[in-house]
Each structure stands twice: as structure tokens, then as C-alpha cells.
Length: 341
Image 1 (cartoon, helix red, strand yellow):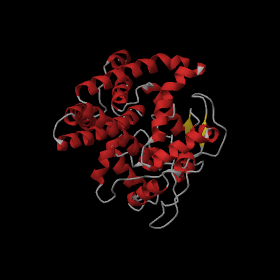
Image 2 (image 1 turned 60 degrees about the vertical axis):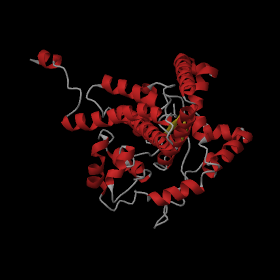
Image 3 (image 1 turned 135 degrees about the vertical axis):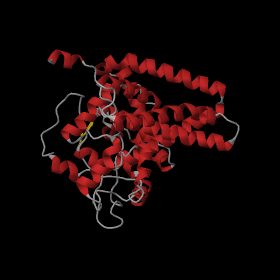
Image 4 (image 1 turned 120 degrees about the vertical axis):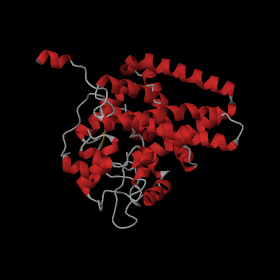
């Protein structure tokens, strides 16, 4: 009986709810991304603008679907999660690094309750004042230069660092594929190419806005498997240094625009809970008046005010009290799960 049971194939999805929710979001993400290029190349300005919006949203969803796949919440089968993670990795423009490397560092983030990084951005900026000033000037002009640098470093480090040599083939292959596709897109429609680059810049701003204000964790720059220094990073520390940045508290359906990623305290409370069950978990675990929820307007204000300071700040800041409690929250760069590898 045991051998028969073990030979029985597992269902692709965990249950019917997972099948419906994940099928819909995967189909929307893929189709919206593909359709966006046709729209961005259209003669109509309205269609082109719609294409930019679709492209941004598809890439945002793809990034958060990578996150879901890393936690094995999309499918019952690990291989299906990995394959989907790789596909979404390509849509999100982060395929220079493998899904498995992204997953490994992100799970460390949860297990060790720290921002675990393999690239020392603060150290680089301390050593290179010209680079720091350039990034600050570009960020002042709302160019997501710091996040662009973080995405570029996953391609140049395998080319320059002997310790990263094992990742060189993938980085070069993906660089060639993506440059080739961009060249084809530009040959078909220069407008579509320029609008895609605009969409990608907006996408990086969106990811940074949500990533910047999720934690005030300790930051540690280590090799992928190197241990962290000892510390009192228990579950109480985890929740005390985790924040939820919801698009809307009154209209929770709007949080689906970011796949409920804003329910970050609920996610860290139970990381195995899929995206479509996070609102219910948040209500059950923290209630309606949870102080970890940061007001969207206040976060937008501090994101704007601290856009230059955030580039080289060693301090994430910390929320205060009252209506403007997020004003002292500086936020972080370089902590995206897509680029910490």
C-alpha cells in the first residue's frame, strides 16, 4: 500500500482555490506582457500609454510571482514552482541570475531574519564618491539609477570576479538573448523600444518603493552560504522590524495590484501562506488597527523627500507615531530579492 501511495502522482495545484487564483494571475501576467509590446508600438498615443501601463503591471506581478514560487506557494510540485519562477524571471528582466539563487538568498532572509546581501552597495559608494554623487543626482531627477546599478551588478560580477565564474555562462547567455530581443524590438518599432525602457524604469521605482519600507532589519554582506554573526533576531525582533505598506486599507482589492505583497507582516508571520490568503491572515493575526501598517500617503512623501539621502544612507530610519509616522522612515536601496544575490 505504501509503495502504491508513493507512486500516485501529486496534483499540480494544492487545491481548487490555488488552481483558479494562480492560473488567472499567471495567464494575465504572461498575456499582458506580450500584448504590451504590440500596444507600445501602436500609432495611437492612448494605445501606447496603455501598453506602458500593462508592461509595468505585468513585470511587477512577475516579480512577485517569483517570490511566490520561491516559497513554493504556486504549485504543489517543486519543479513546477521552479519552472514558473524561471519564466517570470525572464518577464521581470532579472533572468541573468537563476531562480534558485534568488530563492536561496530570500529563504535566508526569512530564516535568519536579516537583509542578507552578496553585493556591498554601501561599501562601494563609500569608496567611490563620484559614483555616489552621480547616483544621487540621477535619483533627484527620479531616474532609478541605484536600482539599475543593482540589476547591472549581477551581470558584471560573474565577468570580473573569479568567485563568480560559475555564473558567467548564464549571465553572458541571457545578456546576449536580451540585447538581441531589444535590437529586434527597436528594428520593428523605435517607439516600442523607448517605451519599454520607460516601463522598465517605472517598474524599478515600484519595486523599490515597496522593498524600501518593508524592514528595518540588520544588513549583512556575506557570501551566499557564509554564516551571519550571532544576534538576537527572534520572532519578536522580526515582527518589530517588519512593516506592511498596503495600497489601500479601506479597499483591499486594490492590493491585488501588487499581489498582496504589502501584507508583509502576515507574510513573515507565516511565509508558506499564498498571496490570495494573506489579507485574511493579516486580519486574524494582527487585527484592523495594526500599527505596523504604514499609511501609503506618508510613505510616498518620505520616498520622495529622501530619494537622494536614501542612496548612501547606512540607516533605514524608523517609523514614529501619529499621522506622519512614516516621515522618519528613510528606507533602503539594494534589498530587492531579485538583486541581493
